[in-house]
Structure formats: structure tokens, C-alpha cells
Length: 136
Image (cartoon, rainbow, N blue to C red; front, top):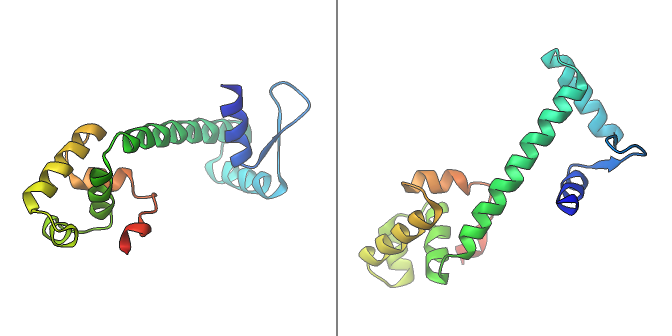
């Protein structure tokens, strides 16, 4: 858990300071934090704590999504990537040389594994992922 915490703080650009619970921010992040705190009329420490809580939640979500991605078959990954790239079932079927019904089956399997109900939910959950390698 400590390594995860240190990794997250490093990614956020936060360096651990001398005390047990003190972290020194780089000047750029410190300035941004102070400006945000001023805009929100809240103490900087409170804004900082909220940002870390949010980052940890995003980190956990990303890890869970990646774990589910790894549970997909190569074909399900391909169908998922093309779905997230905005392809229709017919377009994917033509591109992959399989039937639209097979695409529907792969997509159904993917949605079940991701515990989602539809394409839009899947696209929203994975919108930050880079699927450009499937453009070829």
C-alpha cells in the first residue's frame, strides 16, 4: 500500500517532506492549489486532501477497468476498442470479416465482464484510453 501511495504522489508531482504527514508541492502545483482554494473559498489543505482522495478513487477505478480489460479475449478486446472508436456493429463486422451477430455476442460478453449495460456506458468508462492502434 505504501508503494501505491508513493507512486500516486509521484505521479501527482508531490514530494514527501520531512514529517510523517507532510508533503511539499512543486511550485507550479502549489500555485495552482492556492488559486483553486481561493476560488472555492476553502483552506488549501482541504482542497489538497480532496484532490488526493479523488486521485485515489480514479486510480482504483482505472485498475479495476484494466483488470477487466485483461479478462477479455483478444477478439473481445478488438471489438471493445472499435466500439470505443465509434464503429457500428456492421462496420466492425465488415472490418473483421465476421457477422454482426458475432460482434453482438462479443460485445455482450464484454459488457457482462465490465458489468455495464450498453455501448455508451463502456465508451464513457474508457474514454481516456488510447485505442489508436486499432485504426490500422
